[in-house]
Image 1 (cartoon, rainbow, N blue to C red):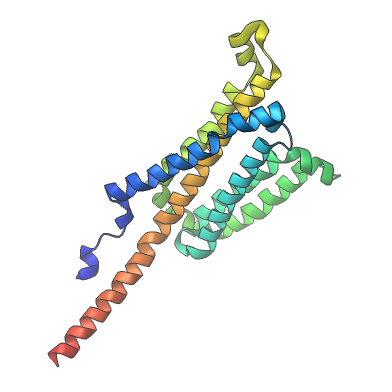
Image 2: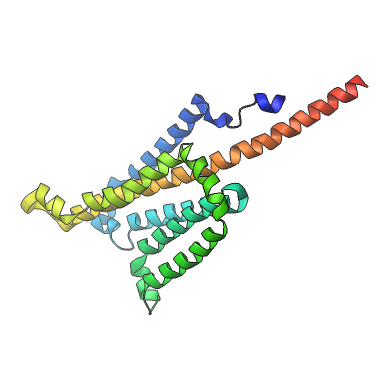
Length: 233
């Protein structure tokens, strides 16, 4: 009876949600606040290949990939969804480091590695296809879907549209410099990758919290029942 009365996701109380999102906001501010200092010290080169800003998406994508892989191993019921997201993030990681991979891989460059990741990823996702539905339901019914979707929109359509040279040239006219395009494109991508990390954290929390809490509740309930029986004796 005790476990029925307990809510499976106690972390979804308004206070918990506000607390988590306050921390996420602090994280976003902490990432973007130092940018003027970095650009002042390093110039626009901070946004170029191998620059400081170029490494930030790499770190964020690697973090998201790590969270999805941990979820893949720890959450068997949502393993398919974690596998699918891990493959997509891994492909984004490969694409983001295309210049480096082109210099390392003589045949096909980054596309060769991307094809390998896609092939292996497809086989893994196909093997775990039975758990994709449960994972998708969990994502859509929680906070993670909104965050992951916003991150995707920021990285792909918004960043690509707002970072187009044609648009920025129309806005700035003769004052246009290529650096403006790089600044807009990389900054919006950075925000998107941050949102994806936050979405990955929320997804892992949503798929693990109820299970572990449920197990804890069952243990407490069993102990209480056992104690009552001993007391009656």
